[in-house]
Length: 303
Image (tube, rainbow, N blue to C red; front, side, top):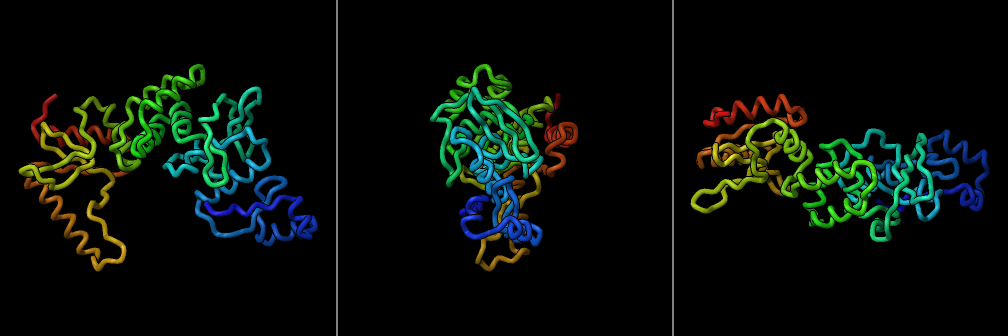
């Protein structure tokens, strides 16, 4: 995020703005009111940057011991995260402060150490490991796994996450966090893959290998999102094309589709069957279980 361009009431007064001019600028959509005493110039912002501008405004109105945390910290770290209300910012204050929830922020109260706090841009934020563990404790299970998978993919070690879990003893959701970290797998490359892993684990079906390598004579032919080697089955989630058009080259959409079809044919020639599912199925244990059961039975699996 670039400079959040915060304008406090004292700063506006120093620049010669009167209360009337501030009200007029807000009404004309030239200024955006972030808090009672903080504004920012109106401009086009991505949802992520808009959230972080609001976060910066709220941090500026709290004492220095308050940090950005939970989903807001995840956004600052660039993690994919579920945000029900993008205007609601998560903050954490250490004891003996008290938590509270307003229309614009959720102030959590929890202990943390100096190692749990980092700076992202100009924002005081819980560290990536602490952020993931806080989400693992409090978020919906599948989204908690999404966050943990992303952390492992960024080379945050499982041991470091478990150390934060251990230090969080006595907080709500610690056992759930321990289970999430144990289940996490940095090989998942998308939200849909992480969610699919969670749902597949609940189906009672054989569990696949993420990012399965399809090889012929020791040479890599393709990599599938999921692979069941014993049944020569590849699973692909959300229909994403594995052969992407590269920006600036002369590949047409038709060329990309031809390449995808060739890839799938290479997988089949290697002796594997490919089954696909979309975002909605990835979130449904019953729908995904039915699809995979049919595919596995087709490949010779029996309960």
